[in-house]
Amino acid sequence: MSFRYFVLGLLTQQSMSGYDIKNCLENLAWLIGSPSFGSLYPALHALLEDGLATVEVVRDEGKPMRKLYTITEVGLEELGRWLEQPPEPDTSLKTFLMRLMLARRLSHPWLAEHLERRRDQVAAEYASLEEMAGMQEGAGCLGQHLAQNYGLAVARAELDWLNATLEQLSEPEQQLSLGKVQEDATLPIR
Amino acid sequence: MSFRYFVLGLLTQQSMSGYDIKNCLENLAWLIGSPSFGSLYPALHALLEDGLATVEVVRDEGKPMRKLYTITEVGLEELGRWLEQPPEPDTSLKTFLMRLMLARRLSHPWLAEHLERRRDQVAAEYASLEEMAGMQEGAGCLGQHLAQNYGLAVARAELDWLNATLEQLSEPEQQLSLGKVQEDATLPIR
DNA sequence: AAGCGCATGTAAAAGGTTACATGATTAC
DNA sequence: GTAATCATGTAACCTTTTACATGCGCTT
Image 1 (tube, helix red, strand yellow):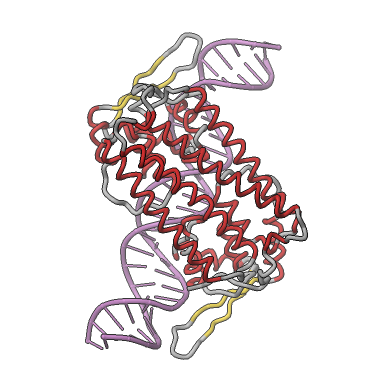
Image 2 (spheres, each protein chain N blue to C red):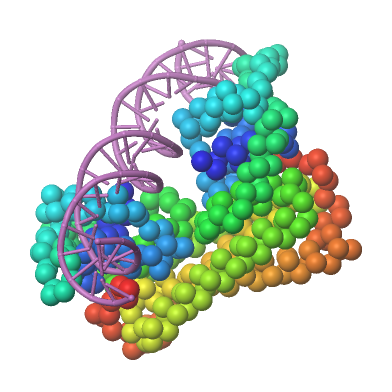
């Protein structure tokens, strides 16, 4: 399950509690989904058991107790292995974005490869949708026509973004126009 | 589970076997996913049990036996009920597209409402992503920056498409530029 | 006769959600 | 004192995938 690794990746940015993680994923639920506590807490327990993270009970005055999870060395290695896992023909936007979000831990060439892979996948989907649309040539019922158009529009937007970003990446002096980006910045938790 | 109703909806276009359905969804796996046989066949059995569909064993010469599923009157009613179900704050593109694909069975005003609902949802997500991006103002680490941009680009494309389509819908004489659309056209199965 | 594409199906396992249970603290 | 927010956790349930099992008919 990839959520497990994504959560592990989030811990590289900041030690967090289950509640923190939930809050920080809530904002992105649309893009990558947000797990329920019923799966999040067990996932954290599993990270502990596998030695990929450690806990520390924190007692801030005037606040309920929290359990801060921190990634371990072993966790970092395991995460690295997941991030650099080969091909994986996964068409899901979700998985792509989960890895993209952890880009800080990615080498520059790996990032480019990640984006290129996505571009190739989307391009293939785009072509197959176009072919489907061509096959029906004015036929095809309303719903399918609409759904195909929708899919084509989204795919086109993805391809444009990917191509533009890859181009920026290939100009090393530009650094993606992200000169101001702080390497240690974190997701807003609440 | 919405897949069940979607499968039922596909049967309104054509009587199909489980294998047919799988093939015809494979093309759209990118957009709405394709269930495995392990869930598809049981789903079809369930439709039978509930009287929403009937089977007929077909033996074409020189071919293995197939089970053709056909939607019943009761199935049509049940499907109608599902399609017209109220709000449902579902942000998933998948569910939206599943219903959109069955648009033929939707009344014109219902279709517009369906699109408007999606537009409102996407607009809300867009706003919240923009707000998040604003909060970080040049901060935020590379990955989050990229993921947010990606999400914004996709949302923008969706909004453009939805607005354009809604506009076309509001010009009744245009009929969505789909004058040639055949009401009885079907999805290509293989 | 071996292998492949068609075609259907089941059982075990994995993964997730829902609903529930608990408890501290703050605001009204 | 009671509702709301913070915070963690468990168990029952539902769904889905994975892996397996089966069999026809065509081609080599």
